[in-house]
Image (cartoon, rainbow, N blue to C red; front, side, top):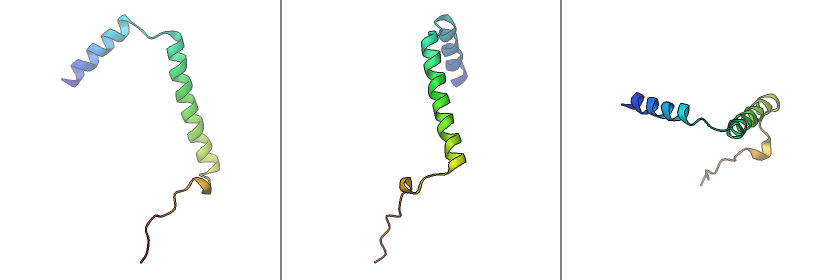
Amino acid sequence: MNQLLWLLRAKRWVQNPPSAARVKLVLGVVAACLAVVVLERIFGWPDWLAVDSLRRNP
């Protein structure tokens, strides 16, 4: 049933494709996310953004 819904969605997308501006926006957001991931892999995660343990030892 899920495949049928995806086929109907694809049919609607082919009949009414998104504008060039929308496609550029989505590609820009994906590129920005990939850039953040690459920078995090290269330089690591900063210590000031790390979450400290919230467990309290009585």
